[in-house]
Image (cartoon, rainbow, N blue to C red):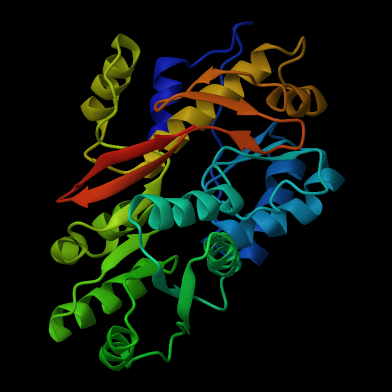
Length: 330
């Protein structure tokens, strides 16, 4: 929420002078509650548009009813490739798992020259399954070998045994599109066994670790992470102003969430400003899908007619509490 609130501090009014009112509903990242929240926001609160911060499961649930309620939804962080499928009203601000999985696989195979990988995934997560599948599909297509696929559930506890098995199989890299709790558990096992393969995590890994496991960040040192942003962002006068306002009000640092919230809120307001009636949902939705070269934090953002976004993807290396840019892919 901090990034969205920063955007409203900078631009509290639309071009026609209307003040923007922020209505907050906590869906607890539970799909059933996401549907309930959307219904209330539209029917009771009469909102003109919705910004969704929840993950892919909730975004897919909202996809199923957004057109019925004719409310534009801008999904900030969820990356499942079907979030905007079959709907005129749901749009993604983030790159999707097809792009992320492909870039990750190409980087591992072509830049790191790694041939043998193991992939961990959460079977009960649509995000994790989708991203793992995309990575494996691309990696195999460029003559990489997926030596093992490790399902990780609440019952998984034998991480040291798994690490020992993978080491014996000659695995060179672990790809971990799993919950940060599992990444930490896997990393503890690697530390205990003394095995040091290369490791790549997926979007928001460092952000989630900072929030939930700040005392164990050292375990992630040197890991690769795909993300929307990097700590090495080039400073511009506008970005300096954004940072000044943000840091004057909030203590959060090095987090993907406020950055995406800020971008999403400003982009949504620009779409509303292009409508003769900035509260008309159909117009807002149409204008979101015609966004071209919006000035994002790491580069230009465009939203296509199918609701998917074209934007830079960053391969980073985790260093302390920061993401060091390795390569930027447009």
